[in-house]
Image 1: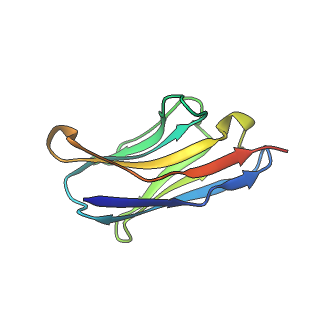
Image 2 (image 1 turned 90 degrees about the horizontal axis):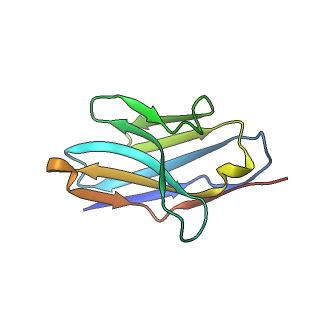
Length: 119
């Protein structure tokens, strides 16, 4: 079992920055992908924002490229998302995710942290 806890969300003005953190604990082995997803409105699908694969490759959704940076500190079991030049459309609940096991059979989610971008 893996336990994920996000932090760092809050209210920020357009153009501002936030850094989200995800603390991971538990059975952290055979990880395929670590990522940040967001849900912009209740009932809307969660969308992948940024991810790091086990081979170190990183990918971003086009909407955040050049503004967001994902990083991981494996020694501390932490995942981060640095968000710069925030826009109102970035407002969402942000979730940390770990996919692990053969063929990615295990999916773990945090409870999310709210990010609100508003003046």
